[in-house]
Amino acid sequence: MKQIIVASVLHMERQGLPEDTPFAPGMGKNGGDGAHATETETDPSALSVSRLISKVKEIVSLPDIYQRLMEVIDNPSSSASDVADVISCDPGLTARLLRIVNSAFYSFPSKIETVSRGVTILGTKELCDLALATSVMKMFDSALNGLVDMTLFWQHSIGCGVFARKLALFRHEPNAERFFVMGILHDIGRLILLLHAPDIIQAAIMRASQPRRALHGIEKKILNFTHADVGAGLLKAWDLPSSHQEAVALHHHPSKARRFKLETAVIHVADILATAMGMGSSGNMLVPDISPGAWRQLEIDPSILTRITEEAENEVKDLLRIFK
Image (cartoon, rainbow, N blue to C red; front, side, top):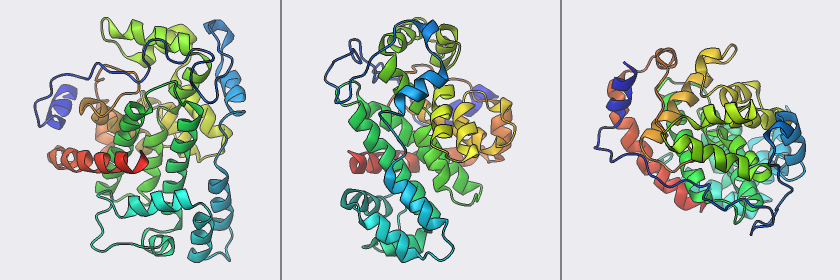
């Protein structure tokens, strides 16, 4: 059944996964062209999730604007205009958010010209989630400048986010934007590994390529933890919701989810759909099997997959232009 599900997604003939990976040989070396080159580790036994998180917090912290937005949202006396005022303090973020709400991602019938109007239509939490996603992407682009092909990486992450949001919408889940954020962040731990252990992650990618094997499995053998563990650790350090932490931590092993089974199942399936459709790359060159339990958890008719993939391709292309 697992292969049937994957095959039904690929309604067009696929010529195999792209050979490109954002982590090219020689990238990530200490010094490099990166704006934030850091001391790197070459001994796997010296690494742990907690050590990586403590090191990376010096470089990437939760965006200030997201923290200010959450303070406003948590204030019972705040209004939609208060949220819009915070966002408007960042012209770059304002422009990106307006381009997103006027893109194929939403396909609203009329143009939304102000942030306050966007807040009114989408909701405060929804727009806050979009602000988090775009701010994190900008922050990591700065930290990894010259170290990695971020276009390939974000194409995969955006693909996962778009698929996750669409699956949530078909299930009529509240605030589908939170699933988009989980998808954007699901592989963020691999960027942290690149920052502090580029030689190790490159060796793992090489071992996973011949023959093709799951990259997270190779990470586990080398490090005794995976990029998913590191990503979840960062989200915990940022004090993001527990649902986000569990979905990121277990997106390769959704059957282990305990509190947030649905969120984890959605990100698991969305990750595989984005990989199967050849939407960018986060280093993995294998299309894994979909967990039957995760698929059942979604309770979605397989007949909608063709429609979802067609819509997702257009939305990902649109969002890539915006984020670039």
